[in-house]
Length: 113
Image 1 (cartoon, helix red, strand yellow):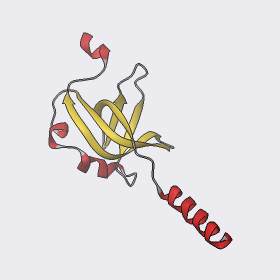
Image 2: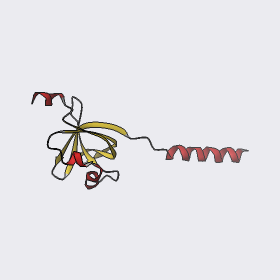
Image 3: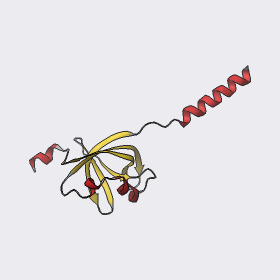
Image 4: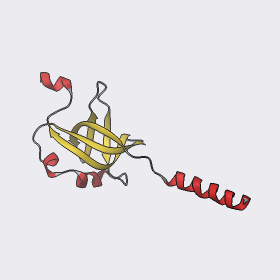
């Protein structure tokens, strides 16, 4: 009985460790800066994140974007499912998917431009 209980506890802890937390949602204005995509968050602080694909690569994020986001002439607001990634070159988001794309900026100060 004790061996069964120990095996059960070990398997339960392994199963709990393998469950990944769902990604968070981030919304902001999308910009291309050189070869990198940047999300400026829709908040008063306007926190900026470098956008990466699920493997943490900048080049792969471009493939996640729908065509309308890439060819937009003005500001575009996107919502992404992502995990925060702290990097030496700045804060980044490891994006698993793009949830929505809307024309225009989400920032209030853009209304006065």
